[in-house]
Image (tube, rainbow, N blue to C red):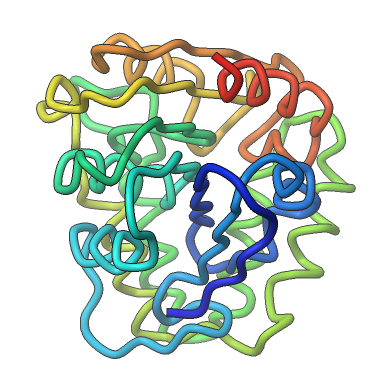
Length: 252
């Protein structure tokens, strides 16, 4: 797995979302590197990491856990937040704290889970991957930023990173989307012992604020901070507010 490491101090590992790579974090690694040793990963099949085996949520968590020696702060965005939660369940000794953004325990809508994306939309994305995957990724980025302040600037930033290191592995894209479509961690949240901060956009359409509230309620040691005008990537669109929430938690 490809990793970039910056700075010195306590360990933080940063896990990006579906279809992207570690460059999607923008300036956040540099913000943290003055106080922490920051490990920014490219998940298998994304960015500069090869896909060597089929991907599952548990295998992604295990692959990231191999990159750190001891307890670390895990910062996960979207799919990366699911990976961080899975790591906290599988490898509690390696997870000191969790920071989750654009996070939900279940991305797909269900009768008892309305604050989510329609399964039909996720199925459409999966079907479209067999054709023009670039158009599919662009549509997914548009869904992430839709409705938020600074949407155009955020979309430009994400588009600039999307293919910076070449095309993602097609099978990794399909497997990652299947993780989003089928994962449901709600029943396991009570087993997450790590102190958790959830930093969420109030206009997030991919994981609506109701999902973040339910996530916070289900975790034993969680606090939710909502940035009202932000969408699915508040660390890009509202970096000052995001960093203030993050820094407060990291200094506790």
